[in-house]
Amino acid sequence: MFHVTARRKREGKVMMSRQVRRNPRSVRRGPGPSSTLLTPDRAGNVVGVDPHKRKLSATVADPRGGIVASEHFRVSGEGHRALEAWARQFGPIVRWGIEGASAWGRHTAIFLALRGYDVRDVCPNRTGRQDRARQRGKSDVLDAERIARETLAHPLLPRAFKRAGDDAGPDEQAELLAVWWQARCSLVKRRQQLLSESEALLRDLPLEVIEQLPEAKAVRPRLGALEGATRQRALDPPTALRVRLLDEYRDHIAKLDSQEKTITRELRALVQASGSTLDQLCGLSTISVAELLVEVGDPRRFTEGGFARFNASAPLVASTGEGPGEPMRHRYNPGGNRRVNAILHRMAVTQLRCDPRAKRIYATARADGQHTKKEARRILKRHLSDVVHRRMMRDLASHPRPGLLAAQPRADGARSRVARQGRARRAA
Image (tube, rainbow, N blue to C red; front, top):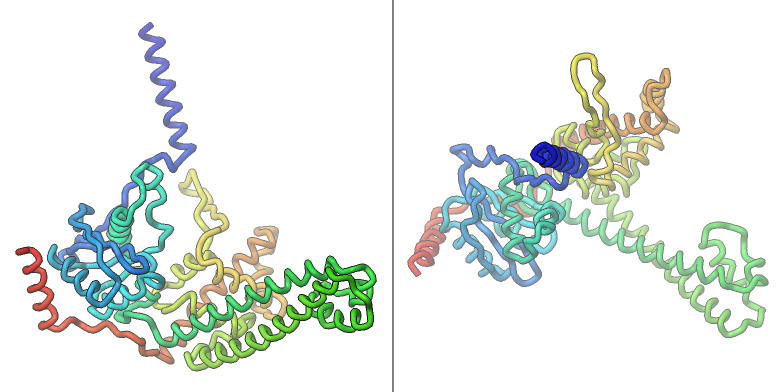
């Protein structure tokens, strides 16, 4: 009986170990080391902020990850000043983490950046998934706590507004590019929706009308020929309604095309004003250059390898049994910024048609069957990532841009006033 019980226990342990190996998510993972924040010159608390439309929740965490306090404030000038005074009464603050610093947390991030703080942008995807799965639930205080611990555990989180060095706050040139770029994205979505609806309405027209239209896959030529095909034809009420809607869609699509040309001209002027020479590279149009400038921000945030990891052109390590003489294997990286990755893909495909250097890199990768066609194209994309990053760094050195909001050190009077407010709050 004893031997049977011992064997069952051993089998149970083996099964549990196999389940842990098969399901890595079952292993409880902590926030990770935070050695950067524990150095003598950088010791201090970390504040996590969960912003909303009218209010925000803040949590102060000490350098060891312990929760000091949590509080709610209004999103206003008075509320931001109260937030700063409340957080400073618990000791020096080394870093602020704001979830969505370019969205609902924009005003809070601007206020703190102007006060000279180190403000980091915490992506909403980084907080709460595994913690909520462990039945802790969801609340604003819990979210602020998760943001604070995420900021403490990962000192390399991106700065707010994609800045680097001593720059802080939104950059004027980047803001203009981002606004025009978002306007173009919205316009393209509306136009594509109209084109899809037009395709469905054209499909439901009578065959006599469809036969009079050009045999083209594109919607615009058929919309242009629809008026002539139905001008002297008696139509039943449903068909007449479809034709009237198609006429309205044709006019609306033409107006959107004109607006897109205007936006493209604005983007071209902004790209030229920024001093960027990315449009001189083969395979990059004005639209692609504008999207790169919006998505990347300050290129000083990255090294060449870091930029490749950011855009997912750098492969992921996928190797086991490593040792002397054993190969180091890699695999496709499905993460990163897919918009930048798509730009590099189009750039690679274009250069393979007309650039001798790209053809040489691709042919070298394909020589002797070392890599497949996809792998060779990814090798070219990795090379183009370095080319784009070096060009952006060179452009930045040649044409430095002043920021719209520059971080300013807090004056002694402001510090003393904040200290007095903190002492008054503690006395109360």
